[in-house]
Image 1: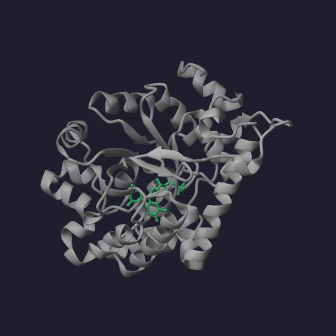
Image 2: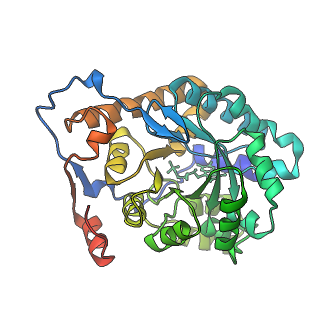
Image 3: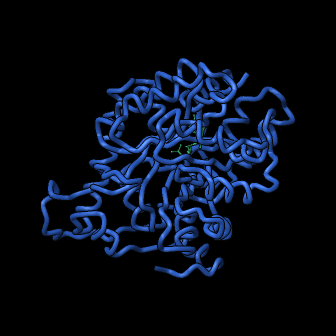
Length: 355
Ligand SMILES: Cc1cc2nc3c(=O)[nH]c(=O)nc-3n(C[C@H](O)[C@H](O)[C@H](O)COP(=O)(O)O)c2cc1C
C-alpha cells in the first residue's frame, strides 16, 4: 500500500502537471540590481558554503523526496551520485516505510553509501511523531543513512486532503520539542509546499529549532498530486480546491527570517533556476533546496541528466552573483535588492520590517 503510494507520487510528479498554476513563488517581485561594472572575474565567484559541518561547493541541497521501492532506490542512488560529484547536500524521502518493512531500508541507506562526503538528511513526517514514534525509532532513521540531520516534515495540507491521510497534529509542538531536546541528531523542520509563517517560525524557535526549511508555495503542489492520485470524487474535488493553498516561498523566507538572524533557513519550493536561487539567498535563505526538477531529470535521463541540470543551476547562480558585483555569497548578501508589488503589500500588511 505505502509502496504503491510512493511510486504513484514519483510517476505523477514526473508525468503530470503537479505545480501551482496561479500562485507563484513571488520571486518575480524581487529584483537584484544589475551591476554593469562588476570588476571581478566570473570564474573567481566562490559559492562555497558551510552547512552541517561540511563545506558545500554551492549553497544547495537536493530536497528529500523518496525511498521504499525499487524505483525509489534507483532515484536515490543516482541523485546521491550527483550530490557527491558536485559536493552538495541531499535528503531522502520519508523513512516511515523502513520502520514497517525492514527490506525498504536499502533504498535509503544507498544514499550514504554513495554520498560519503556530503551532508545526508533523514526524513520522517510530523504525523508519525503524533502517533507515538519512539526516540529509539527516530534515532534508527538517522543511523540508517548515517544522517547529519533528520528532517521532520510538516504536511498538514497533504494529510488533510489525502484519502488515507493522518491529519492529526494535536500536541505536535511538544513532540518536536521532545525530539529536539533528546535526539542525538540535529533536527530540521520542513514544510512541503505550503510554507512557514512568522508565527510558526516563532513557535519552532521557542522549542529550540534552529534549522527551518520553509518549503513554500509556487512549486510542487502536494494537494494537486493527491487530487490526481485519487479516484474518489469527493476527495479529488477537495484536494483540487486546495491545490493553490499556501505561503509563497519568497514570503516564507522573509517571514521566517524576521524571527531570528541566527536561524539556518533552507529555501525549498519552486526553485527552478539559479536566478531564483540567488533571490532566495538575498532574501535571507542560507541554502536552497530543489525537488521536482531533480526527480524529473533523474527519471528521464538518469545520473547524467540530473548532473547536467544541477550544473546549470549552479552556473546560473554564479552568473547572477557575478552580475551584482559580488565574488562570494557573503558579499552578495549585502548587494542592493528591490522588493515591490504584491510582495511589498504582503510585508506591509504583516508589518514585517524591510531589511
Ligand atoms: C515526488 C516527491 C516526493 C516527496 N516526498 C517528500 C517526503 O517524503 N518528505 C518530505 O519532507 N518532502 C517530500 N517532498 C517535498 C519536497 O521535498 C519539496 O519540499 C517540495 O516538492 C517543494 O519543492 P519543489 O517545488 O522544488 O518540488 C516530495 C516532493 C516530491 C516531488
